[in-house]
Length: 197
Image (tube, rainbow, N blue to C red; front, side, top):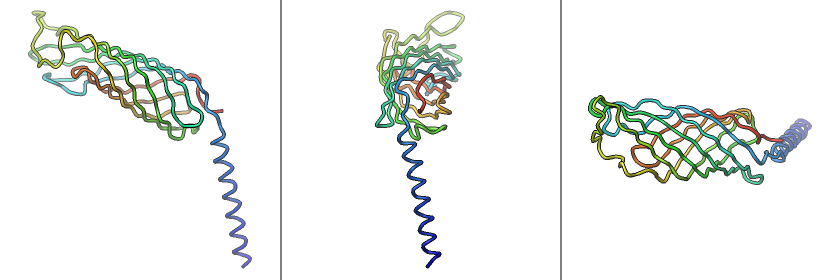
């Protein structure tokens, strides 16, 4: 009987400590405003009629507002991307995109040193498809996946990532926009502000 009472008292003590530590984490407040700048790699999601997709570069700046009662943030992102495709017939074509989007993330384990997030962005993409790099400087027909008259497109961006120590974010995203300019991005960002107090 004494052993049972001792085990029950020990269980109550452990449960009390667990609840205290959980409430301490829940009571911690996240910084309301944070900014992020970053860059990384991009690559076309589809080869289209080309033989190769080549790695490109992406860069961005983002400002976010962290909600206190729910683990959500909302913000705005501006960025640019450049990547290449090439083929024997069409030569090399550069794909340049400038994006401005409203973004939002759901944050898992927000006040931990390593936290995960998943989010979306929605906005506008400004498109700049340069002419293929060929010796005769002629525009080849590469399948009509992008029209020469289109200069903009709606952009939808799902993304997932991990935040390390409240100051580094590694993000994988996919920008779903005008068909020829759809691309993946893998980036590393530095975060200013935010964090938990």
